[in-house]
Image 1 (cartoon, rainbow, N blue to C red):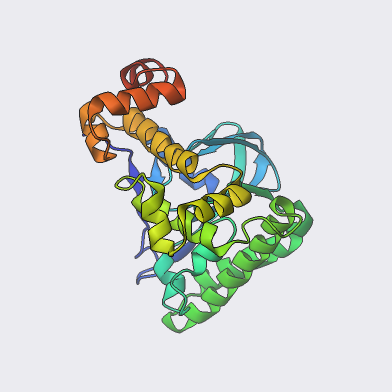
Image 2 (cartoon, one colour):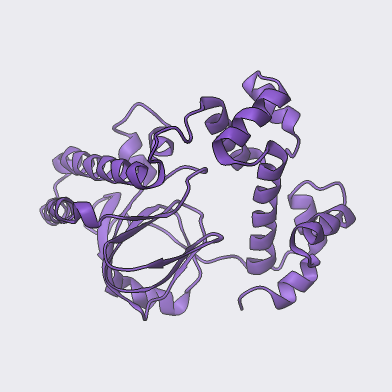
Length: 288
């Protein structure tokens, strides 16, 4: 089976395990030559310093330029225009680096840009550029002078950066502070992200939350603007498109992987949502 290439964290880059790093986009571009479409096994925050070009994360496409930041989580499919995006840097880290310090295993999910229901993977940091640069310089300095006992300093600096970006992201994407406020909706979306391949019905998720299907529909629609059925179908459709685009799985195998009753039902579902059969989409609508 053809799979999307994945880049893993270079844990021993500094002689002993360190799960945080800052890399220049110029140093990443050589890998883009080999695998322009790829996933990462770690969290990535890319800061654009010069140039303007396209940056895609899963099914979302953005035009980015100086002062923009793009967020990606492990497993998300990424590609970006290495020729038009001239320079910048990526702050990368493994989840373990933070979770060994925080007691909350959901800490990263609580960040507005690192959760399944985020509005956008992009934000502008033009208004806080000076502070961002100061933090980047401090993190780089700590990494260069790295000693095992300094991990807490690096965690503190990363935490400050994450919270600074979280505040700026919320300012730009949730101006009234009311969106994404319902805990049931948040929990539902987290569950869907984990279980949508096996469970398509609203009752499964409502039972998990100990609320009625009608109430779940109400809170989800209030939070994201669509009902539960459509939210789950959107996840299924996105996953189906990924599997058609980046694997050699047959339509029957994809149907089984996504727990459709049979391939015919999967084909009808896909065509009703896209206007194309899965095979037509694979042969005519996907990138080489």
